Image (cartoon, rainbow, N blue to C red):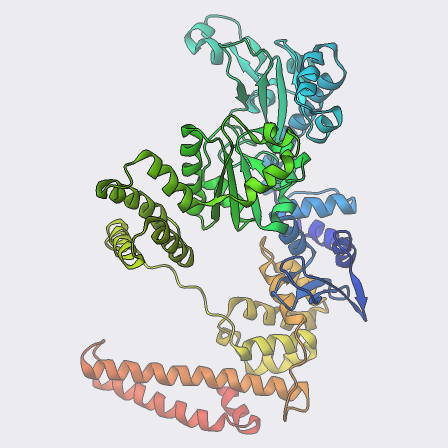
Length: 621
């Protein structure tokens, strides 16, 4: 269970996090009257449409619609969840977080685990830089052209060739159960088997020994695990790499190496470079390819793909040119295509990896050209299959086509599917119509016989509802007309209804509207985003409406009239289907009752044309 921050602390963080100062720390804001303007960080634009309002403590982009409070900005810009945004702002403001009882235990326990991992990472790092035992590791890094400053930048460390390095370090301050939970230590039971260990005293020892250590960080930069590379190349009995096991913090199917460093660059370019190893990723970053990441000793998973989808629109896979590398690239491409990412594949020269290639003279330029010339996933798949199949025969062509269509079928985006079919048609020399027919057959066979219909999204706010919310947010004194003459259940959109409700509450409670919004918002800050949109809207007084009061009255009339018309149509449909025998059969009394209601609605609608004649109708409805 996630920790829950008390509402009073959230409000304190919000009050101590001036939105202009927070956003201004990320990029320059230019004052424009009472507000600030800048080029929007969430979409490409040439003319500034991103506005920060210090008085309202909101931001809003008139170009792409992004907006919200200071929590929402950190979530959107840093690509973090609500709790991480809270922690980041609390740290910036120097505020100690207090958690409600519901989440206190789990949060504090995880905090201890994060602290231990961070301190162990620095412990290994100090062994690398300063201890005599780390000389061999320092020599290895020097041979790989990785300096001490680079080791500091990526917190590379060294685990000495001892059984108790971490055990001795931790024994005064941390419990063995914590170290075991993080996979830093093992017991004899894990090494020799439970039956043998049961007959002997418990023996604890370090998991990582005589290895170059690469800390693995999550997206927020917290150390969640380790990957240890063997130092003795002649030790054929030991695995080349040993990773942390699955722990409460480390899930290798979701963690990508160096994503915490690459995230901002990926968001800016909307593309990620995918490598196979840590040193390859480090070399890419040093050469300016700062969007590079890698998996952690596992094939790419759906979770990896979904994580990258939050930041990128496309990925470039950089894999070995041998058969194993080709197969790995095709599997990874399939995984990324399934979440709607565009995929390109760059096959390295035989015997090369990104590290060795970039280290050559003009290697960075050559690697850049390799990325630039990367093939679309379908083109790469066709080339690989043609080299393996008898592509010039009918049987070979059919097998290649079937494999390619299966890849295309698993992509969720219709536009992407159409594009991939076009590419496949051009490369295979097969008419697109023929490919589409075969693809449709695959789709039909793969589709469940009775797939449940997707839940329909809730109704969007009508223009009248939105305009009413904008008027009330701009001037809460107008809420009395809504309080008296408009039941809020007639507002179809949930966010719009909630916003109007808060406007109604702000007057008697004498509370600031954005303070109420912040208090009632969810973790996604949806209400803050909507409030920013509403508060950033221009005045709605137009045409014959000479005052805001008259505008609000007109909108109330419009919403009430729309409701009456919907009910009349509903009655007409019920009576028609009953008469035709296609719906529930009405008896004479029920039909007469609906007929009378229909007539009354017509009478009410006629009186809703002006405020004076409508008020008596609204007062009794």
